[in-house]
Length: 237
Image (cartoon, rainbow, N blue to C red):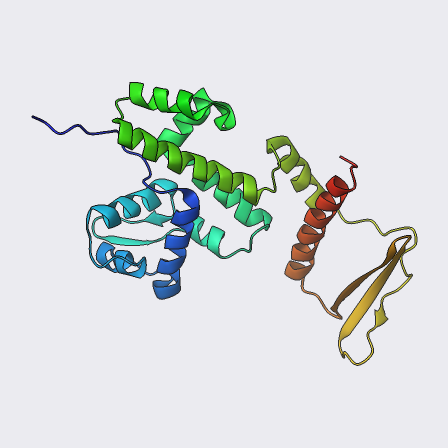
């Protein structure tokens, strides 16, 4: 009797996949390595059913790339692990990776943003020739991936993320009661300070005398995220 087989799907969620790709990068960066070496970096003793399934999942998310036996960390994978949580670049790369698996794209098309019950999605998978255990595993990986996307975006929807991106592209206006000029910080050579006097108290921003264009851009992105969160906590949106 022929063994029942299910359609291809990522065997792990995106969060775990990122942890695995980070382990590969810490050992061999983006250098091409045999699959057995990549599996060893991820904690597997050899190429077996489990490790091959994980390698296949990383390929489906677009975190690994390569042909034949050689594989390497992809640029998309590097984009995720090179940026800290909350960075717009990381969030965008995670959204892209989450949409890469064909099965997840099909589920999203049928249930936009995963807005369907587990029972409904599982039934759909069964109609697509998944055996019950595989349907449960695929659903788990899908849910874990969607949760990671929501976590990285701070719970924002697509519209809110677009608004945040627009905020980041605009210069941050000075506050009305901002100190007219940053003053040097005593005892810290090459450091300046801007003080914002609010009714609740002072907000102090300390920064180096000289900032590169890249650092100014990074700081603007961070402040935009900070202000978005502050507005939400204050009930302004």
